[in-house]
Image 1 (tube, one colour):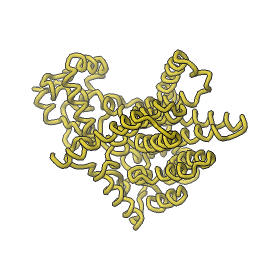
Image 2: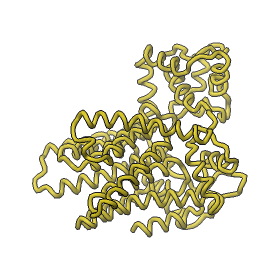
Image 3: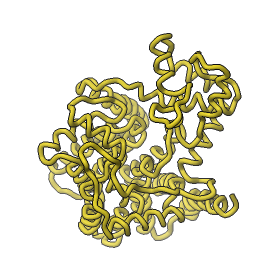
Image 4: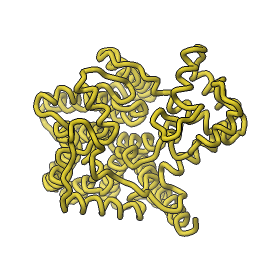
Length: 454
């Protein structure tokens, strides 16, 4: 199943789809000059892969290898434990429509999810290999993959931390104090890996953090009707912001917006350089003084991003063609690509195509895993998938299924592993089943009702 899945995606999407982000990163790889808007590490690796073959194909293969290897290792672990049905269920995770289609596009989200899946697979296999050398290799490999994933997104730390803690030797996490100490140290290390790599690669600073700050200032201004922007020499900034603000995404403030916003990225960045103010201080001050407006803005965006209480959607799951690029890379339309795209689009009409479903499934798996005292890696994957999805409540600036790639795959793996743990218990507690089921069922029913009534 794993080989067939990888073969279908390879044939359908060869040599890999390049969206705007990938085109931007590939240009940096060609120029050997990097920026921190997208992970410089990914662009640097891409440059090294160009010696094998130019274009998106090598990065596409790397993504597929990490994705399917992670699922394969987890399935192998279940098979080695004599649990063939569990192994089959794990293999099926790779065929979930949204991730299956998204693996055809070169993105940091796919690469990050693949790294975390492989790290999870190695930690599961660690329990069934016999030699100390093999166990050490699995541990070190998983830790390296977790740090690699952490370097691909700023909010990846919430996804990486639980898995990194599960990878540590038991002596380092044997007590609550040691868990807290190890957690703090690991969090600092995970947060530091991105800036360290940026410095090593001499990546140009692009003030990428302004995208979140400007989006939040726009949302607070819109909902409080009080200007939160610094002096950008704009008359009636509240009215101007009303024309610019869109709770769906921050792009209306970006430098590539069809109609430039006077409160957007470039005016904000220029004013920061000239007036030497702290954007973070302005941002925090706005949140502190208008918490309700901030909450309204954040919850509205998160609701749209997770496709929760919306009339329809998502209207888009995955790409089927590359954007125009100077190198002429594109994919040839074919029957497999059409079939995969149609299935992914159809998936959007059921809960399996809604990010909110997978966030709730991850939370349910976490509650169930803790209640049955599941192995640390099971708890870690459940926590990782749920926390990463929830992190977009605070850090989200756009909508799209790709942002929840890891949440979907991780929650599915966690739910299957927890289900396997429950199946081995003759009489699982009613509470241990009903509470997790409610965590999934209630939001799903609300989502269905919203689509029927809105």
